[in-house]
Length: 187
Image 1 (cartoon, rainbow, N blue to C red):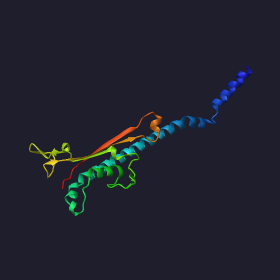
Image 2 (cartoon, rainbow, N blue to C red):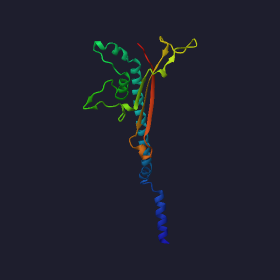
Image 3 (cartoon, rainbow, N blue to C red):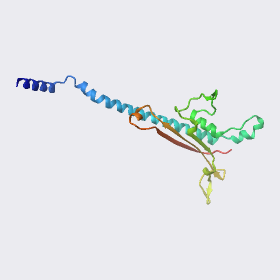
Image 4 (cartoon, helix red, strand yellow):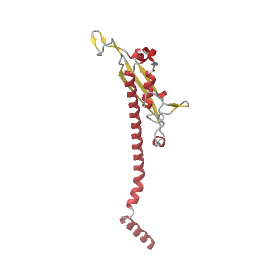
């Protein structure tokens, strides 16, 4: 019986004791806070990559809308060579520059987003399916000096694999996608 009273006294004393409560609380809270912080970091990184992809597509569509490959073709006798506006716009989307530096067959430019490739981007300049009549049935649909308004479209995808939090949650790569359209400026 004495031993039972001794155990009860120690349990009561332990219940009133405040020493070590911070350690116990931190042991319970720290893993949860760490996982929450990692999730916020992962989501922030995903949003950052998405914004970089969208910025690249916007830049590509703007360049494609104003690029005039016909100008260079018309003046080939003056030393100009024909340019591929869609390819240059794709370079701008992925690498941020119209012309690439190639050494020994390898592109040395750094992509805007690590792992993003030209194969993931499509730039369509003035495709016939993207052209719309400026005036339809006597009503002005688009203000234009030409009878049709055509669109330049830059579209792309990026397989986002993350920094590790997604694999911890057994979530596979997320495909980020976007597009940007601009009115094709004809010269």
